[in-house]
Length: 265
Length: 225
Image 1 (cartoon, chains in turn green, brown):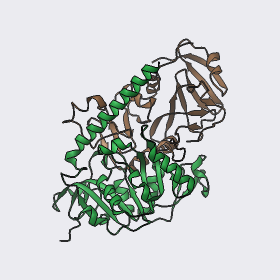
Image 2 (spheres, chains in turn blue, cyan):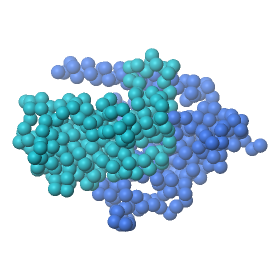
Image 3 (cartoon, chains in turn orange, yellow):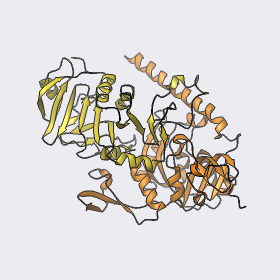
Image 4 (tube, chains in turn green, blue):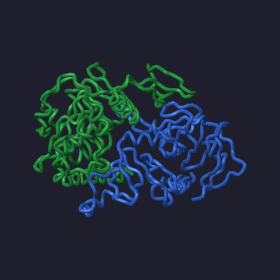
């Protein structure tokens, strides 16, 4: 039987400069191991398509938090619905502002709904869709408008990533995936939309062990499966400690900010 | 200066709009506080892919509960959720089909609302390049009923209920009800109707804090919780 199981480095060797890469960035369900491996591969001029682009302070990164900005030097365009930055670090934000100014970085703002339906349109290999979201807002600028049955829409291009990075709870050797909790999010749609999909998973089982009724992403959409080993920084085993460290750090920062405010008053 | 309502009281008043059987998405800020006051039987949705959630672990208690916490179960604002019966998980496409379906009530925060029911809900990030639109445009467009909760005026005292938006538009003509720390205002085809006032405030005083013109409802009364 052909196995799709491999290492992250091997799974990503074929990625080319200029690729359109999509991934879910929303708490659990973020393919952190694959993101770090992609950074190490050193591919350039990426277009990054993600639901959220949350920049983290360096100190948080040291504690194991990651953010899509690790790919920033390799990125020429970002398609994103929600961006935010930790208050105590403005360096990545300043870098983004500078590069947009000088024209080496482009940002395309979408909504979460537009993000997911454009990927879905990509998955269905459609020529595009008419969406009601963004009418009367800054998002309609430069877009074709159309009224259908009395409702106003704008034309939206599909997103068909060259590379989809997904995170799932379990896979079998055929690439069938199951998810857990809200770690599902955009992962199944990214898997279907992408021309080449790599899934990182906490656990790998034999074919037949996953309940066929519970498989969300059928293996046909998954080209490579990468196990996250227990000694990996992003393993399930090390997650609790990593998360608790981040939360403690945030609580401490909040307490400091409160104390500072109290001092002023 | 008379007292304005606390965020907690604003949330309490907004939550009174919900009845058992309603499906509801709560935005970040004041709306999140509505969860504590929503009647039993209201199904809360979070756009990252959960419906029917209940209590959350507060950050302070996570450490002592770390054996019980499911680290894969969070809401859109990254609060860890307690497993409750009837809760379900789904992908983002299913989630936004719910959000666009007109089956849900959205309670969102606001930066500005105008007399036509346009709202500015999302802000721009610090560098003013990338937006924080998130799900706000979808939630506002697709809601059966859109309730905006916010302070009546911004920190510098300028009115947030205006004739015309000056901030980035999130949605046009979708707001049904505005609940602030001073008033409850309904958006109608004939403009804004002042329905309820905070205890101790007169309709005239509330108009003075509002740029848009308010019509005072015949049965205007004090906010009850």
